[in-house]
Image (cartoon, rainbow, N blue to C red):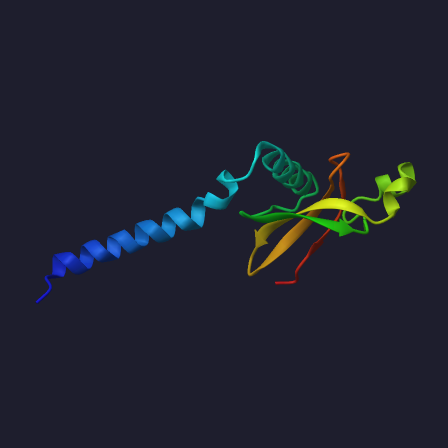
Length: 118
C-alpha cells in the first residue's frame, strides 16, 4: 500500500516539472547566437508595436513574400523588400494561438508577420 506522503511527493514533482516546462523554454537555449539575436529582434519589434509576445515557440528559415504587418514604413522606403525573400519565421505564444514575425535573413529587419485569432 502506497502512503499518502508518496502521493503528495509525486504531486509536488509533477507541479515542479510543469512549472519548469511552462516558464523555461529549453528549445530556446539550444539555438545558436544568430538565431537568438533574431528571436530578440522579433520580440523587441512586437513590444514596440504594443503586441506582447508570449514564450518563444520556434524559428525556421522560409521563402516569404513580405506583408509589412504592423509597419508600412519599409514598404515605401525600401521597395526592393517587396519581392519573395529568405526570412526567419519566428513564432511566439499568444493565448491558444501564436504570433509570427518575419525577419529578413540578410538585413535582419522585420518585413512582415501574422497572428492567429485565438
